[in-house]
Amino acid sequence: MTANVFDEHESRVRFITAIAMEVKALSLDVSRDEMVSTIDPGAEKLVYAKAYQAWADCKIEGTAEDIFEAVQEVLDV
Image (cartoon, rainbow, N blue to C red; front, side, top):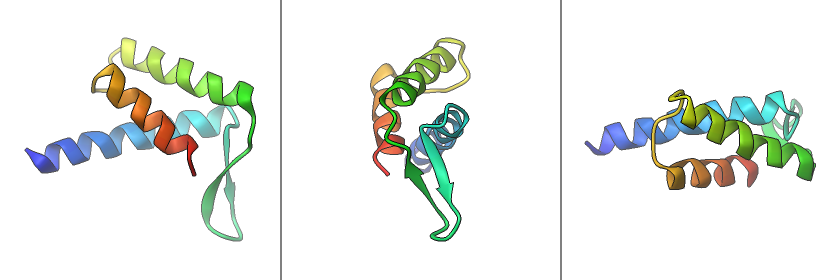
């Protein structure tokens, strides 16, 4: 059960990270090999909107709170 919950969380984070990169809220810093925030409030709002839309379309599993927490985790790089 715990592994499944962890796997679901990791899946949400990966999906939302892809959204964040798509809307340019995050970018890859190749020199440090990590994601960095672009500090763009408009892009961050789009991440929330697209994440909740994906959740409503059953593309992301979890509760509304799970989605909110995953978006916060992704944007808090």
